Length: 245
Image 1 (cartoon, one colour):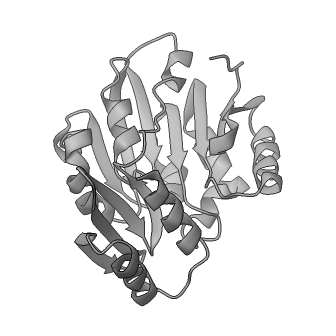
Image 2 (cartoon, rainbow, N blue to C red; image 1 turned 60 degrees about the vertical axis):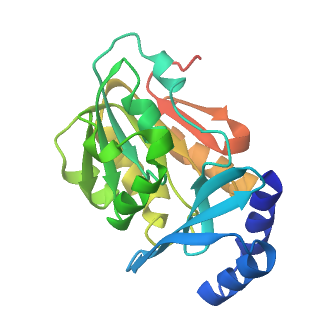
């Protein structure tokens, strides 16, 4: 299955030909693949593919033909970041929820009392349902409050304070993701953090080292401490207190 993921990534990371190329690629290489969900709106085309590989069946989520997540790879999460907090009843904001894997990990953590899941594209809430075998029914989880909104506008106007704001975003080249990399947005996030709060930021893995370093320096304009939690994953932590895991 990892070979499938590698093929998909290499084929479509720079593709702009759209659905026809995408469907031809899967028809030629994975004739057993089937689209189980497909919906398009102003934020792009969301697709869930089911792929049968020998005895294993996997679901993979795409937005505009770019792979986002799937059941074929280990779940990445932020549960270890929660160890940085010495208290419980944590209130968390999560932006960019994709399949919902990390969201489920956060919500199921015993130290977390509530998660505000902020999603700009309402179609993503429909797509999440296909991954409930791994996440559970997130839309019915009493600890999760879904907020369909632009994250920048939300943090600029919301009165809520958060212990952790965790953001997983696509490439800065994507129009609706680009503002999340800007200083105005970082300032809005900082204003919504509690005194000992942490900002965790997952950049697109394909981001260049130079861009990743630029982002780290940008965060240092707002936070006293910024460190790489998982350098290969382009995962930054920022806070006004020392960060030790």
